[in-house]
Amino acid sequence: MINHLGTVTLETKRLILRKFSTEDSIDMFNNWAHDAEVTRYLTWINHPDIQTTIRLLKLWMDSYKNIDYYQWAIELKESKQVVGSISIINIDDYNENCEIGYCIGKAFWNCGIMTEAFSSVIDFTFNKLGFKRIAGRHHTCNLASGRVMKKCGLKYEGILRKIIKDGNGELVDCKCYSILKDEYLTS
Image 1 (cartoon, rainbow, N blue to C red):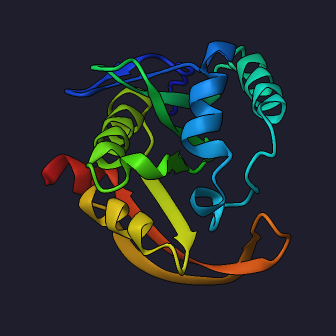
Image 2 (cartoon, helix red, strand yellow):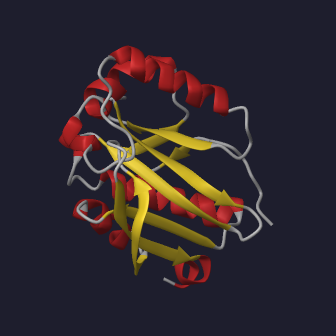
Image 3 (cartoon, rainbow, N blue to C red):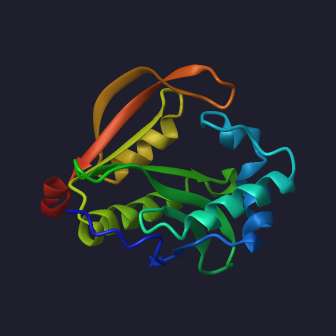
């Protein structure tokens, strides 16, 4: 049985994962939401202006009232800067599984930040919420995302063909990964 707690604050060595606020709009827009290179392989296009970012943040903030909604801002402890987001999506309570999605600004690629954030969310998802399986997937060309999943212990399962539309509305193939709670607890 899943024990939903909502988006609670999580802390790692370098990061604070917390709820977004409208005050995060400048960091979000500047660090990743406006960058076409960051959003290249995602399901949404880069934001043309900060108003778009603010509208999205307001939707997210309104969703925090739902106990089964999980959307974290990734904040660097040292600078208090928000550099990305991570969320639990595609929640299936009955089958006790979910998926994790994430995005981080280009200036913060290859620093281990997303691996640190993802590892924290995995621990929370298994040990606090009670899920038995966590999945992740990425556009087949987004190899860096696959490396993050592997570093976090997820195993490659295969390719789902034309599974999701990218930001341009084109159906794309995705590589799929997963980790089971039993594997996580014994690793």
